[in-house]
Length: 112
Length: 113
Image 1 (cartoon, rainbow over the protein chains, first blue to last red):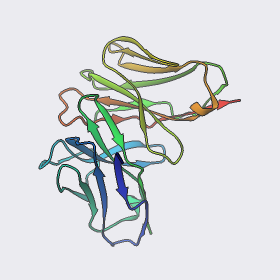
Image 2: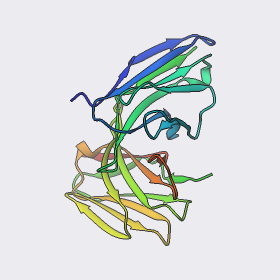
Image 3: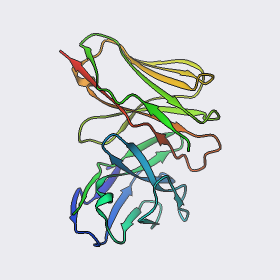
């Protein structure tokens, strides 16, 4: 099993450009999450999907949209990137049986 | 705003010592508590979860929970240089749907040989 995979690993954007971060899990988990991590800020929840077909806002949703494409895939879209969105983005999925969130390797995004 | 607070550190301990990491939370109704470890440049991984007041031990790690004081801690016995990482405390607030967590800002631990 690959676990949680994310693409791309690195990305540089110019202000105003758009992009989609991809996330997939092969563990048959219902719940998936998108976080951003900034220095000294810990992990902050952007959006989550408790189950296929549902999405909800987290702590910092402004400037982002998400799509739960199917049970495996949960994408994060930046419609018009801003320098304040420079961050490391982590996707996670949750095993309900063990109450454990498993994280992907992260995407390091820089917005110039 | 539901909050989780940690000392950012860095916390420096000598090899073989006990490292003590602390976390406080604001939502009194929280029921689930987690400690994640994150090595530099890597993703977080779960090392301990605790749900009831008291201590929970797993190898060299002990999680302690005091709901009355809204306090959760992680003790690492016989600290090793390989334990050097950032430790993230996470809390699931009361009534939470979807299993979402609120994370503290993390405590950086450095274990000196």
